[in-house]
Length: 183
Ligand SMILES: O=P(O)(O)OC[C@H]1O[C@H](OP(=O)(O)OP(=O)(O)O)[C@H](O)[C@@H]1O
Ligand SMILES: Nc1ncnc2[nH]cnc12
Image (cartoon, rainbow, N blue to C red; front, side, top):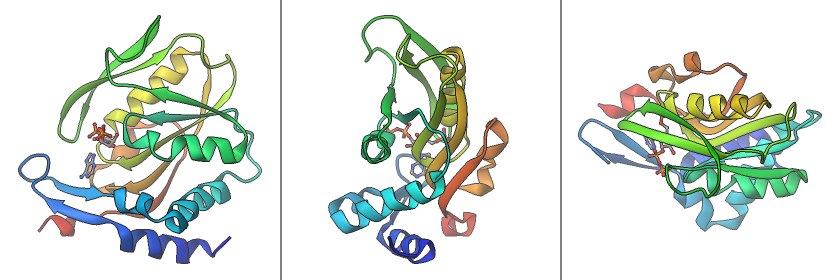
């Protein structure tokens, strides 16, 4: 595995910024280029594995949709289960459901009832922590399932939006987006 700071530099270099997307005043951080290069994708997984070393993880919960791009790969490489938290109306059967506000609008997340064993340790993963509304909703879904949130993993945090204040477990983020980038 490469050095963690070198991995962070390479990942940061791959990101692209799109001003005023999806709405006026938002600087959109696009992390999709990471997945077009297998060596970068591998480094992303390696970086998260380094962070989870020695911890007892039972499930990775990935948030629709960008958490689905690397959550399953991380889960597989750790040898643990992957559970999706989905946008409303997509999951069959009984679901837990939570409404929330995010950086650009309101939304809902759902998780199937009974897919996570009670008392298990869950790591929640997503591409970006902005206002924290999405991640906090996922935390509340995991708690409704009777499981514990061990940690949150994000590729990027927009720390000026103070999303961490909404979350009740440790947060690890590889990269930070600066407010000045909006000017
Ligand atoms: O911290 P917050 O303010 O809640 O924002 C972060 C969320 O916003 C984006 O998802 P989006 O809802 O745009 O969905 P997508 O992943 O399907 O594009 C992003 O992937 C996070 O899930
Ligand atoms: N600024 C941003 N860029 C990309 N995804 C986001 N999700 C919420 N805010 C975002």
